[in-house]
Length: 146
Image 1: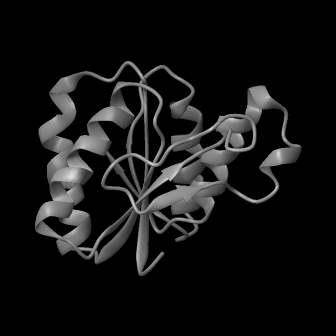
Image 2 (image 1 turned 90 degrees about the horizontal axis):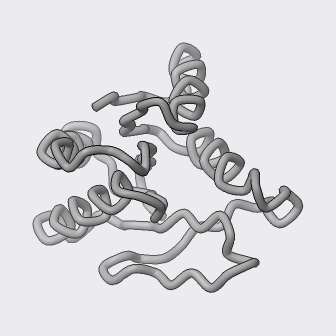
């Protein structure tokens, strides 16, 4: 991975109405903040929208890198989606109970990213956003809410 990194978190039930905001936020992070590495999961509608928007952005910014966060990599085969540069499986996750793997992977990735683009509704993503906002108060990450 190179340069500044940005992670995405959102509800699996997020509305497709977010796509334009998402594309604009990605463009701002690339051109305004110098982000070169983007990390996203693959569960639900928000992640699907992010993957599509990142694939599109990579056509205009071929120097960005796209990585898939794979919280269950040891337990199931996770193929890297087309257009992505690889997968990330956080160290130590193999010791985490299966039901907590996504939460721990998300916390790890937030803690190790420079930026977070988020859409939190009433889902578990809200807790991760609150965690990121607590880190933001200490100057450790910048959070963009959609």
